Length: 459
Ligand code: UDX
Image (tube, rainbow, N blue to C red; front, top):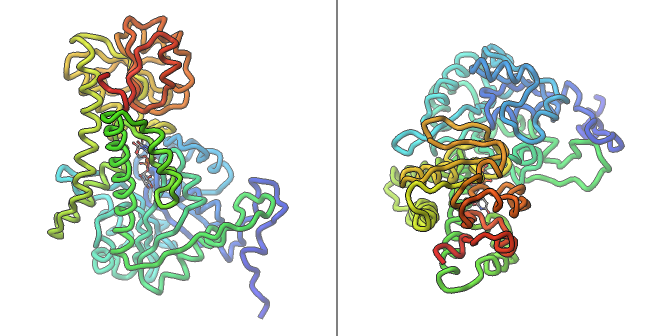
């Protein structure tokens, strides 16, 4: 029998970047991704780029139309470009599930009032998949779900399929990169699903040059197989650890100020220890976004449900709340009621327009609650719900015109380089509060500001 060409035979080394060969149709799997949100759309585009035949199901009609028009409603860097290079069917109905080798569940699991994830979208998707999918099809759970969910679905609506927990570790603003070049692929499911999952991610696992290129050494990606419960916990554990690391970093920054040490020097030196690593060492207003707050509370709920007192996690969550109020109190102490604040940054972090659980938005709320008036500018956020009471402008100097204090709340690079003299020329007061230690104190003072960074609050 002729030797089957391997995936390597299809990959041209000399191909110019962006035109790597696609595996032949024999290699391609039929994949249906349920949910074209942040995880689903990025997963769909990357799996299509790997050469699979991908359909993406989105039930939100306006969002579906935008995907169909080749637009990226998520504004995720690199996604729109990659979308142009691949073939994906964006559909409103789920009938393609019947022909799929792999069905990827990537629907939302928003935090419920009790701190536990709302699984209604996951359960609806599971029932639909169970009624349509072929016997033995692999169902890949990419949505972040409580421990035990995959077991429950495997024994319930998906009893005729093979359920595999496959948590994602995508950061907003870097999701395409993180999906193409993951540090690890975590999977938890039955032995019978292994071949298909390893075919699905084969080109990533082998570290192949996904964009042609010069044939640099492949960067092999480890596939870590475990039980579904372990894979589900692995996601919460990773996010819980990163959040706890950040809470510790913020505590060190606060303590450094209290004892006259230099937080930047201390944290920078810590980052040189490979056991600690240089990332997630920047003090700020506390961690936010659509994941850390939700996942830490979900992990807390999992521990509570198991009767386990997760002391370290509880302290990290508590510290995060105090981190924001500590900064807000410093601003409020410095300003009489009715003062005006020029708030720079609304997104929960730089590189995304996402304001979900944004510390900047929470800060604005605390300031307005205490009688201050807030005008804001953010390069990616052009409008806010009116009930938040924040006047959104389209430039830094407009948001800071007449302000008694300027407050930096999101670490956008343009704020680090902004023309501080031009800003000072339009403000009424000379206070500059830097919630991300982004601005050079010397530059701020030279421009006529009184600088208050995280390590100098209240001085
Ligand atoms: C996170 C995880 O990183 C990702 O693996 C997971 O899949 C989803 O949740 P994301 O929510 O996009 O990704 O945010 P991330 O970039 O991790 O930042 C989380 C929060 O920590 C943000 O509020 C950010 O401002 C803050 N942060 C991050 C700091 O305050 N300091 C840092 O040094 C890094």
